Length: 383
Image 1: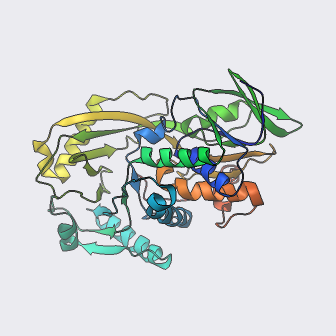
Image 2 (image 1 turned 135 degrees about the vertical axis):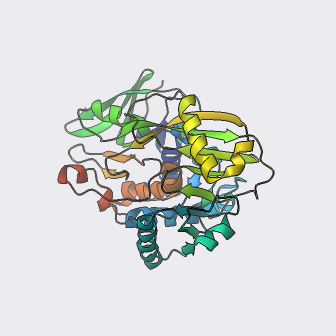
Image 3 (image 1 turned 45 degrees about the horizontal axis):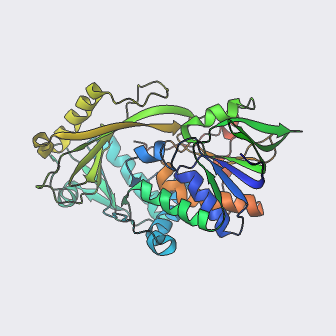
C-alpha cells in the first residue's frame, strides 16, 4: 500500500460507513478513505438485514433519526441515480394484551406530537390492514404508511458509487489491525497492508466496534448478537406487498420478499457472540409463532434462511459522536438492528459534526458517556 495521508479514515463500508463517506464528499470533504475488511461493501450486517425502515419508535431521538432517514430514502433514486424500490407499505404493530394496547396509545400520542401520521387501530382496523392475520386474540394495533422496507444492498452500492465518483477512496479486503494514537489523539489506522494516516478516524465497524475500542484500551459498549431470518417459497394467496407485520407479544415479524414472506424473530436469551450460523431448530420455533399469527404460512415451504449480527448497546440506541479522551476519534455504531433505517441521517449528522463541529439534530442523548453516567434511553419498540 502506498502511504498516503487523509483527512478522515472511516472503518467499515457497511451502509453507515458508506453513508458517512457520501455525505462528507457531498460537503466537499473528499480526501477520505473507507477501510473495509470484506471484499465488497455491505457484506457484513447490512447484507443480512431484513430491510425494515420505520419511524414508529417511542424514544424521541429514534423518531427524529427515522424522520430524517425516511425523507432521504424517498429522494434516493433521484438524488443518487439508483433505481431502488422503497416499499412504503407501512409497519403494522399488533397488540394482543391490554397493557400493550395502552402502551401503543401513549406512543401514538407522542409520535403525533413529533409530526408522525400514525393510525391507532381497533380490531376491525387491523383486519382491514391485514386480512391474512388470525384475529381471535387481537385487540388493536398501530400503522404508519411512510414506514416500509427496501433492499439494503442497493443503498450501499448507491452511496459507495457516488462517494467514489466524488473522490473518496474505498479500500476493500483491508482489515484494520490497530489504531495509531499519538499524544492522546488518533493519527490513523494500521492494516496488514500498511499504515493509513488520517487526522480523524470514524468507527462504523458495526458488531466489531468493541474490538476496535480494545485496540486503544477503550470500552465501546457494543456487543455482537446473532439474529436470524428465513424466507418462504412464493405465497400467491397473500396480497403482496404486505406491510411489515409485527406481533408485539411474541416479537415475530414478517414482510413480503420475492413473492414469499421474510420472517424473523430475536432470540432474547441468546448470549453475545460472533456466531453467524443458522440454527434450524430456532427457525422451527419462529415458523410456529409466525403460522399461529398468519395461518396461510402453514402451506409454505422455507426457501432459504440466514443469520447476521446485531450491534447491540445496553439501551439499544446507537453511539454517535466524538469519543472523550481520544481526540479525533468519532463513533457511529451500536445501532442495535436499526443501522439500515438510520444510515442516511447518521451519514448527514456525522458529516456535519466532522466538518463544522455542529449538527442539525441534538446528538447529546447518543453520547458515549451516557453509559457511565447511567443516563440510558428507553425504547419499547425493539424487535
